[in-house]
Amino acid sequence: MVYFKKHSTGFLLALSCTLAACSSQPSYQGNSTEQSLKQHTNWQYTQSNAQQVNYITDLVDIEGLDSLIEQAVTNNPSFNQVHVALKLAYAQRDVTAASQWFSVDAGFDAQRSKTEGTQYSSSVGISWEADIWQKIADNVAAQDMTIASNQATYQGAKDTLVASVIRTYLNIILQQNLLDIEKQRLVVLQNNEQSIVERYQYGLGDLEALDTARTSTASTRATIADYQEQIAKAKRALMLIVGTDKLQNLPSTLTLPSVIEPLSTLPEQDLARRPDLQSAYYNIQAKHYLVDVSYKELLPSISLSASLSDLASTPSQALLTSPVWSLLGSLSAPLFEGGALRAQVDIAKLNAEQAFWQYQDTLLSAVNEVENALGQEQSLTEQQLQISNALTSAQRSFSNYQSKYQQGLVDILDLLTVQQKVYDLQAQLSQINYTLLTNRIDLGLALGLGVSS
Image 1: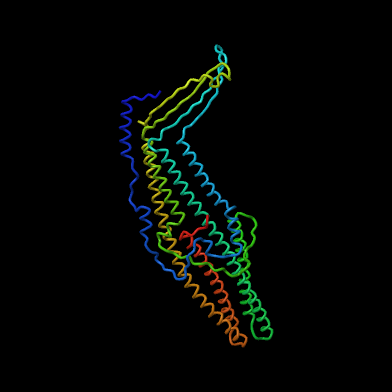
Image 2 (image 1 turned 90 degrees about the horizontal axis):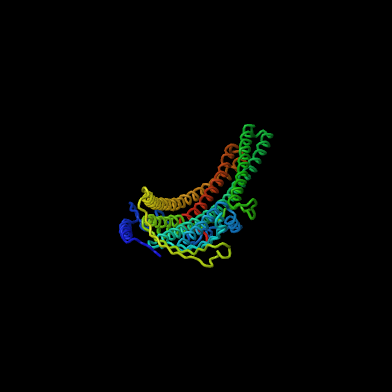
């Protein structure tokens, strides 16, 4: 039977109404997440040659890139940790949801005493807590939001991983390009050394020019050694990202591929598809549900339990052949716990507020990333144009100086200076091209472009 005292019940119901009236979501200064997105109406920079794409992998077409991405998604340790965290969130949700159901347990005991001999007992019990305040439902909803947050985090980690593969791939091509430029420089410098020696033998020069040429040659050899190590480091970095100790289908070209400039649209649309903002938004929702749960911990709980038990002198007779049943209903409510439950309410509200400000911080960082990438696009495009013009002029100047040097009209030091300038500009242009291409990858990430699930 179920027993409740009328006066206690009335008091607890009154207390429940009072606590329910006090239950509310935390209030703090700041825009809502929707208002925060809408307050950015336009991007500061405009684009002229951008294209609409759906995924970050659409920005570049490099042979062998897809296989590397597949290996990275499968083998990268950091990314797989995020994947496991998502699986854990699903498992935790199942644990929380199981609280909504009744539980059944069974037991079998044997006890021996001097007077009664051996006694065997068995029991089966069923218990269930009524979720009258939707506390368990709110816990499940919080877990659902946590899963959504982890799913967004997983997608963001995947997007970042793919972008890292592309950047590192491009860096290998850049370093090989720079190495090729230095090797070309070295060949020319060695030829200059030989020419100076021959001219000196004919009395047309001095050893001071030879020392200068040898200095440039030695410096170039040192630079070549540095670029060779940079290539090795870039390949090791790619192996680390891919999660393997062997790389295949690496680029053999010295030409950096073209990378599409992704089109930015309205800030609200661009930012809303970013996984980090989605994760932060769902995290706010999860914390709000937990605030409700913390308030409902102050309210009474109703539980029901039923059991069957049997006691006999043999194991077979004790297996519920003539069981005794009982049914119990209970109503309980916390009255005094030293302020622990109220403190839990405050903690839950502060966690919700912290999640809100984390979202605001993520949003501001997202806006800043897009604006910086758009600004870099314009700056790097202009730098690329000017350095290209400078390289054209330097090559034309070198051709003129080379002709004059062969005619004995200019000194070898002047020729070396112009020659060095040509190769320096070639290296600088390669660096700018690489920076421009990787900036477009960064812009794609900032605009929320990812990879297909």
